[in-house]
Length: 494
Image (cartoon, rainbow, N blue to C red; front, top):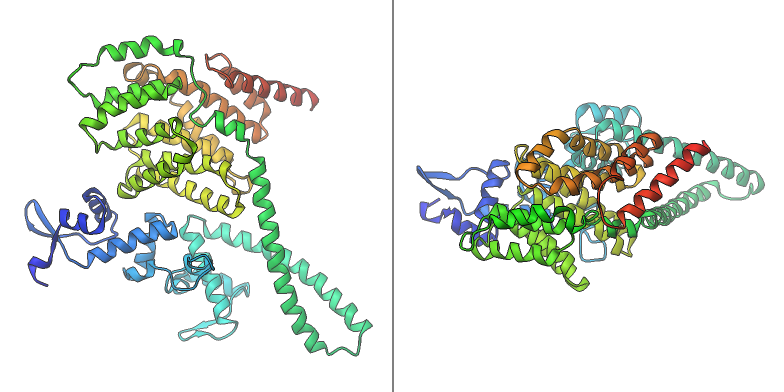
């Protein structure tokens, strides 16, 4: 390949529509190969990397795959980037079918030997040879193993998957027992029937019946979760329960007095924007962020906060456009942990607006993907970032459906923050003196609520009473008193 056909990072960035920082991050994450070093501070990329980056972006946008999963797929397929694409087929909506969205081109070939042996032992799959399946329907077994591998790539342990399958096997066994009794009774009463034809008809009819019942039941279950969402609670707690301005006015004025007319202090202006958001004055928050944007339009923290605060100040019809702006920012800067965390909570709060229960499930999945990426990319040394991301993690996990088993993880995220209270109070006094007055009442309220949902009423009561002492605007005071009364009543009744 001729040297002049290689691309500098700026040229590559323009061709693929991502920032140079994103390209370097892809190299660090081993998603694309390192460039060719032509000089000490100069590197060139081969032209084929254009399609590789585009394949990665399509996998993120169209299949909602996190970078960790994308890398595993590439590693499993010898870095064949075609494996990131859909394998064809349509679900009638212009996209790929569920089967092709979650599989790789040769996913079933990469199942661990121990898991394949366990599946064979339990007779959940047929016996494979080098040419395919010797015993059992080839297509069904392939799709089944691809399904298992995809879920494992998403973070589920093999032991959890096998335990779930055991439960399904037990239920199916009960269905077969009932089916067998029905068939025998039919055979006794109608001896003239062709039993072979009856078995074939029964197999086809039951399969279609189970598919229909599964769809209806799943839709009902998701709809029940939607109805269980406390929309008033979500709306009031979206940005957290707000402080009365008088509670932090002295701190805000002291910070404002440090501002210099001709100097754009990014940290101070972002902190002031955060402070005014804590009292619900979003217009003032945006005014301070606007000063940063004029001087430093590419500062990531400012861009994220600008979009987030405009969400509260804007009209409902602007919400989709603003969310797309944040999605674009995150896609161009995949290692930006705060952007991913805010996108995660944005997806979750949007659940209240959805009517389609399956879209609810999809958006919830995207929310969990983004918070996982935020946790993976956050900087431990950045205390404020660490607190915000774990706070958002706790909020998401405590509100997830009980079947997901995330409540205890949500409690753990909140308690991690609370366990560093002394250290954090010292940090906030020096950097953002108002923030602890917002953080602790919100944290104590949600932690108490999470423990109440976990059935630990006494523990929950302790956290809620501790949160009661802080100055916070309604509806916090009303909600916390309501929760305390309910817990005290339940404790007395038991």
